[in-house]
Amino acid sequence: MDAAPSLQDTFIELLAGAAGGMAGLAVGYPADTIKVHQQVRGESLRSATKHIWRNYGIRGFFRGMSVPLITNGAIFAVFFSTYGACLEYFTAQDGRLAIALEQKLTTEDVSTYKEIFVGGCVGGFFQALVASPVEFLKVQMQIHKEKKALKPNVIVRSIIANRGYVGLGHGLGATMWRDIHSHGLYTICYKFYLDHICARDPGIPCIFMAGGIAGVLFWWSCIPMDVVKSKLQADSISNPIYKGTIDCTRKLYRQGGLKPFLRGYSTVVIRAFPANGAIFLVHDSCRSLLEACGICRSKK
Figure 1 (cartoon, rainbow, N blue to C red):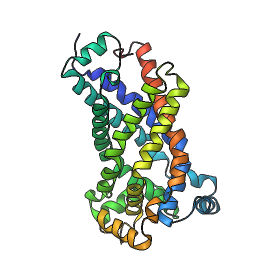
Figure 2 (tube, rainbow, N blue to C red):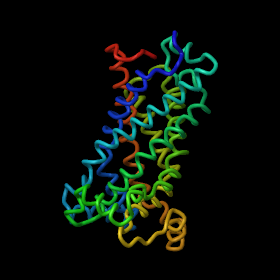
Figure 3 (spheres, rainbow, N blue to C red):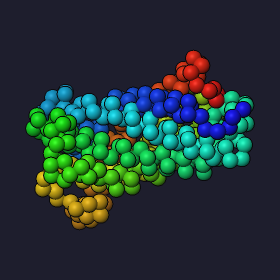
């Protein structure tokens, strides 16, 4: 049997990843909006929630959701397909991929934790390239009061007019610092939980729990840099306060020491568990469904 990475399976990972990403965003978006307000305005969870409700009503918790709902699918499609391709590459080097295919196992089943961590980091790198401009647009849509600011095309035109096309990548460095190592921890935590807690019965509740715990660990490891990224991307497009990631980090530290870097942490944890549980549950369920329909090469 061919042990080379399958383009068909990569395509399936794109579809399953997109479905998982959209599910995760739908579950966690209101809390994400609150988190951004906490990080940018320095408010508590309660104050940020009241601010959004009083100024925008219930719709305020979903401000800017239209674009990320679609693009978040693309972001996770990039992550899962890249992660899967890395594991196929690693396991193909010494014949483990062929064994996995023959025994109907996943590439994760025959991968080491080191390979899973590296694969997650590589996936995090490539998904950050897509996530950064999308999150820049999302943050701008979430925090501005002007109704016209809710239109993505208005914000995009403003960015290009003030900073050129390269300005769409504002905050990419901070996004990379946030996403690379954390996605390595994300994947290894998920696999570890399945191996040691769900070995006998990897059913729906266990997959949801594994994804939720992995999501909490992900955010625990990167919340300080997420604060920096949010401040950078919420900055004025025409008259910015921060020159870059390092400048923003220095100014935040001067304002309040380490405290500003933990803004929104409680909200992140509340959001991370159900959102990431949904991501992995929908991703795995979608892939299993496609395999059952004979659309892709079965690995399970």
